[in-house]
Length: 89
Image (cartoon, rainbow, N blue to C red; front, side, top):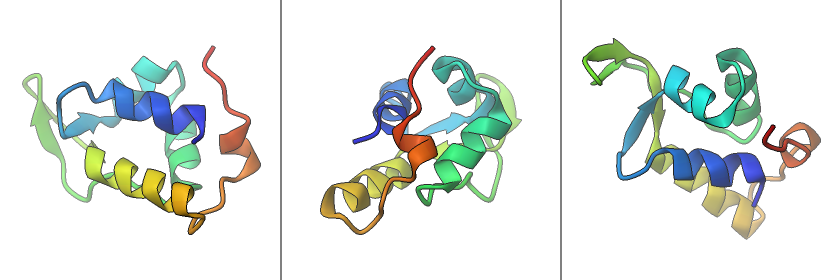
């Protein structure tokens, strides 16, 4: 399992959704880089914005990241080098 995905899932804490900005901050990357990395493993932001911390923004669903993790574990999704080589700063 790539470190990026492990850390991203941990960043959700007990929540089921997280804003893109919050996830990027917790991972120490900018939002554009985060979006590119997650898209490479089939994860996209939710189509609608949602409220967290009094702010309405777009972001990610835990279930989408869990689905990607399962697909990686079963071999249905191959981890591209940019995701496999990503390490926390």
